[in-house]
Amino acid sequence: MEFYLNSRFIWVLLFWLFILTSCKNEEKLIKEPIKTNVEYQMYQPSEMAGFMNAMYAYNLQLKAQIIAGDQPSSLPLDLIKLHSAEMSNGKSRTQNWQNFINVFIASQEAVVDTLSNFEIKERYNAAISNCLNCHKTECTGPIPKIKKLMIQ
Ligand code: HEC
Image (tube, rainbow, N blue to C red; front, side, top):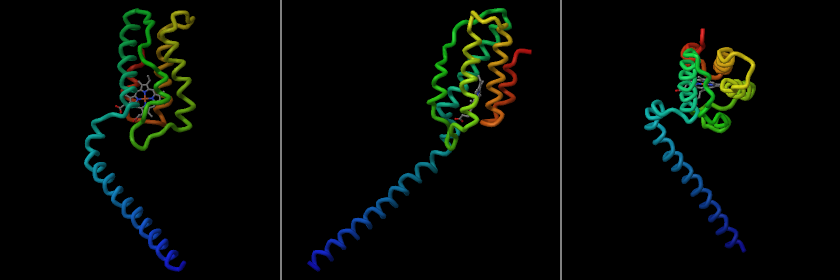
């Protein structure tokens, strides 16, 4: 009995030793690639950053069409992706994001609503204002670039 207990104790000890050392090994394995990846991550935008840039390009094109007197009616971007797209490291959907996102989506969809009673320029500028409203707290870097999207 005593022998049985002792050997079980040793097995448990060996088991934990194995777990502890294997965790350490894993940490090393995970840490090293991250260090070398830092440079890559700077050049590789997150899914969300990529989508934001697509929204920027889309609105730049809308602006040109509206100034030219067109009534654009297509919205080729799937705005629902804003709810699922992965953000850059360390960023997450804050309360502020949650407050602004649906208002923004509705206003961006309203730009191409050909039945609206509001002038297209007003609807477009309202959508861009909503980009800015969220950016004031979530990601301030692109604000000057987004401001240039406004139609004066
Ligand atoms: C609800 C909040 C919110 C709204 C609305 C919003 N953005 Fe963003 N935007 C963000 C966040 C957060 C990031 C950072 C994403 C990341 O780094 O993963 C970002 C990033 C960006 C970037 C930088 C992408 C890069 O290369 O790093 C641009 C440009 C941008 N947004 C433009 C726009 C435009 C144009 C609109 C409106 C058509 C808009 N955003 C609407 C929150 C928002």
